[in-house]
Amino acid sequence: MSTTADRARGPRADRDRQPKQDRSRATRQRLLEAAVACLAEHGWAGSTVAVVAERAGVSRGAAQHHFPTREDLFTAAVEYVAEERSSALRDLFPDGVRGDRRAVVTALVDLYTGPLFRAALQLWVAASNEEQLRGRVTELEARVGRETHRIAVELLRADESRPGVRETVQGLLDMARGLGLANVLTDDTARRERVVAQWAALVEASLG
Figure: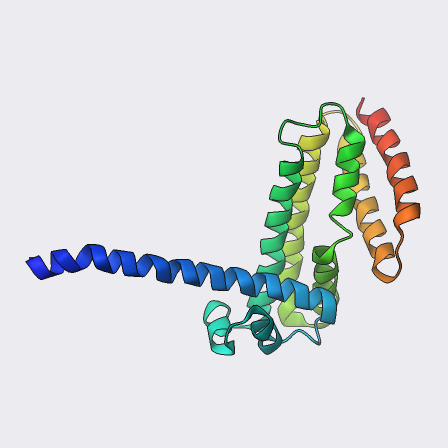
């Protein structure tokens, strides 16, 4: 049976717990964002838990409390930002595309030219050489790929029951990934704009 003291302490304990949970969530988010930034800037070899913790402004112990292993940290980081990226993509078109499919094609291509893509690329390269990372990254890439495809279909208003439509959408995403790779070493903006214009016309003709 609870005592008067217990009942008095209950609400206060709940209030004390809430700020602690908020701080924990904020720390986790800083670690995830720092991990993506480190991967994009320093690659897998230069992105240790200690480096990420320093960038996030937390102790290494705090980092390992949230993510016990390096693999846990970096796969969670890429997944987190992929989810944020998907939300941002939808937010660009809150009322739908209203017939402007070129805007959607441009937005999809932009997904593959930012820090997230560079970070993911570093993770893919590391996974090709590290067995303990390969399975997790393969699963993550498949999940992110399915979600990106689903969003593309939704925004392009594509009817995948029609022959060739699914392949057109997947080809668009494969093209976007290729442009992202081309942009890693050099600024490929001018050529990318011409390619995007051509693909937008092809998508419009294919989807009707």
